[in-house]
Image (cartoon, rainbow over the protein chains, first blue to last red):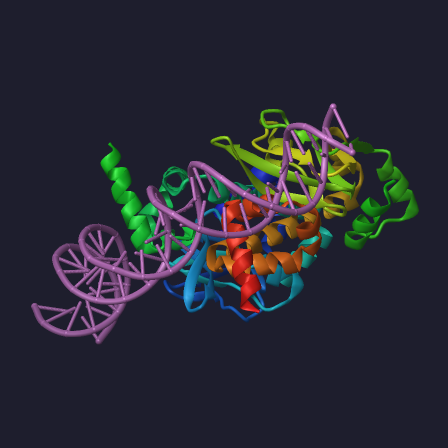
Length: 192
Length: 192
DNA sequence: AAAAACCATTGACTTTTGTCAATGAAAAAG
DNA sequence: CTTTTTCATTGACAAAAGTCAATGGTTTTT
């Protein structure tokens, strides 16, 4: 059940068996059906979710339109960290794009782990550092690259997302309309 | 010299006087003249820099054009974290927009502090968490809000940047040409 | 198995943004 | 103090992206 979670954890911070057992006590498994919400805007985000299996999206709704800010496939972590840390209402929705298995760290578990498990703080620090770096690179390519390049980079970096997620959601993630993305794909196909 | 640095540090993680003295040993002060580089693309980023005084920008160059990805005024922290943590060549430039006073944490200092000062890891974790949340909100508004709103939000959130930084740099930060930003400002002025 | 919902593509048209060039004002350099 | 350099604005035009509407093919639901 927690295989992938601990595999990724150990890649960042090697754990002894005892430490692993200790941490396991604080984890909560959860299954989500396709289209089911993990978080709705306005609710307080009470968990950090690790994806063992399946796919999720995180998105904001503005003027009735959905703007996807993140996907999460197996091995990824997803949450509304602002809401999680401040206790303020969430500004994002998170829901499942496929039937999904999650490992949840609740806020209480998070705080206990920080107190009792020094390696958990290191894990969190590295997790967020990596997320920050990835986000900064995404923002940079958003600002500085032409859309064709951005789409090519995306398909090369996340071929699994391209396969499993509808194109209009990828358009949303890139800040485009579905029509525009469709036309860009056509242009790229003709290049060859 | 390190006043603001420790003020911000204590806001995140309260320190005893001894801890503060201990940390001080690892810090390096540095002054930068306007237009001077802290980091050039291709070099390895060896420091995390805290701004005691002055202003910096971090930017990528693509097709001969500068794309600003971050500003840093006093109280802010700036670095190319990807390069800093991996030792790979930096993909960004950082230079001073005004004469600037910095507090540097070198890579060696960083690693020593992590080993010897538990509160330093907490400080880093919180620092990066906040940076991540801010970046995610910026990306969200980039994708989901019309440019007028984005500019208004920017001026409300960072009035000091608007005052101290040339407009064409703010345009760059927003992913626009200077002409477009100028027209947006005109449109907003006429609204009233 | 049939009906409904979802999805990608395309065309015609509108709106937004970028590009190029010119101007005048302000700031920096000598 | 004078000369450059930098900067913001504007106009005319080109390119890019969005909007609306329609089509046909999938997939999902019943």
